[in-house]
Length: 225
Image (cartoon, rainbow, N blue to C red; front, side):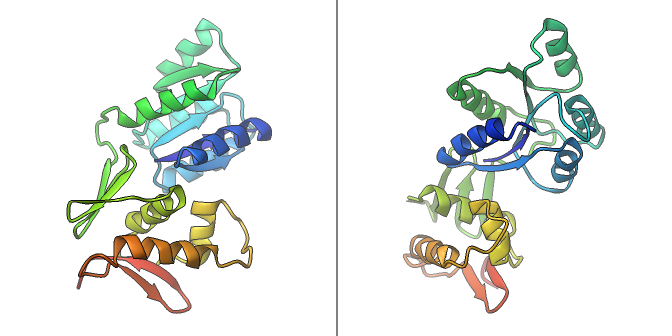
């Protein structure tokens, strides 16, 4: 599951982001309202966790702009503005849920998971399919030709990025940003190591290779041509 966190409190955002990552989810943090809006308009995601008070653009304006643009993904307000009028305003603006700070992470996780499962009109797919490889975004599981594939959290996140970009080359830099949250090259072989492990599980036991390397460019996952 890909979760976007729009929160200007760095300590709070890191607490939520780390918790989601430990649960095996992909979490993107943005501290400016305009940056959050731009990211959500042009990138796939499953749930947005949105603060009401953000620099650049407040949370209500971000949500209204997303809904006006036709974005249907669920939005959870996570804010210190907890009066009844504030809650009503947030829900009427198009919010799907409202959680007031301080909070327990277990409750936040339960609400986010429930929102991701909720049917939507024009909803985002809950499963990704490439050839005989299937990724269930809600169950957080993978299988190929009906056989379950046991993946570690980073392996799952790596496979999700590849499958969401099926047929396109994904660079090492993109993988470092989206899977490991690195905005720089740490000069390690972490990508290569995890890719090797992923291939051993996704490709090696089967007749058809789906994961491919393009020299000096990156990796791609696609069905046989």
